[in-house]
Length: 221
Image 1: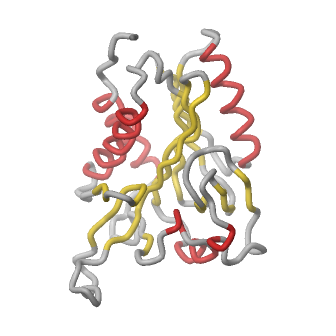
Image 2: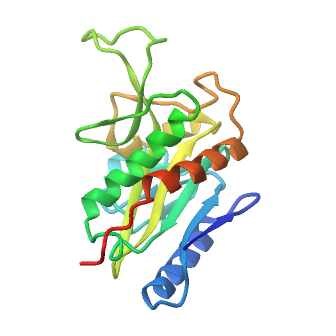
């Protein structure tokens, strides 16, 4: 059983980390159900375990939190849905690569609910959108913008941290970092793509698509 929690308003990042670590420990001990927690944060930057100091281009702009999740620098802020996933990967096959692919497929399926085609790119973490509405790049390629980030950590086979999807954040806030260490591509959101999607609309799609993508529970090895 997976418990779904939706927090209203803005959740402080340190409070979110404390909640996730406590819940992950209880799940590992068999004292709590798995959990998906949907939040928004005040404007902030997080530095994953692979973050490079030079990618924080405006260190005094927003609070910077050092995170133990994988990945590099990421922005969180109002208008972005963060879905924290506290799931028992041990009972879900003990296959970390497959689990990350499920998270990617979850985001892609959710975007498809709004007729947006999200795609994965080798060597580029996250979910990307081809921008047919923009001029071709100097190399003649279709420009691509990032719409969702993924970063997780496992402890005793329990996941925490998760995914973030841009609904309608202030995209200029991303300019204080090099998002995920990638300089040659931009960032977009559902509203930036011309879709009047609300946070509630996205939450409904996230829950429906989660049940589809994570329906199969492999036998514990």
